[in-house]
Length: 178
Image (cartoon, rainbow, N blue to C red):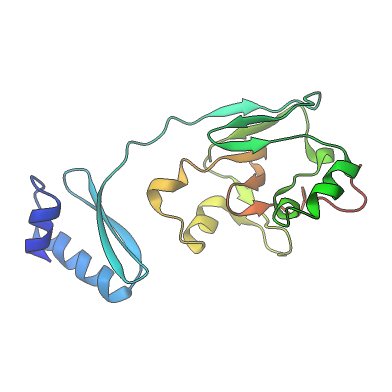
């Protein structure tokens, strides 16, 4: 491992403690550790990856407006506010749409599209348990370098939707949704 690290992470000052952490990581079969020199190592699907740590994204927050009636996109995520009939017709073709649709009834003037914040909570639709977003990201094994970049829709610290994880129980679309 030491020789491979010298090749993969030149200029980093690896010490015995880092090599031991990598050995534990490989034995565990999953996880991630930070290394000196802005490097990180991760084990996923039986492979050890050594990467340069990406710069953390500046937190972002964009207000959603109930009056918005057009399609828009931010960071490659497309949003559209539509009526129930249109939603039902499209749902037949896009099966994942229903799992990622946020009920319009839950959107308020304070609802925002943003990055995660300390204290955020989320109750995934179909589960009866509310968890912190930090805990959920750990359980879902979302890589550390991706966590600050995942867009979400939130009212205060209550998260209504997270890209890749879906909608919350409180914000899911039901037959009662107007």
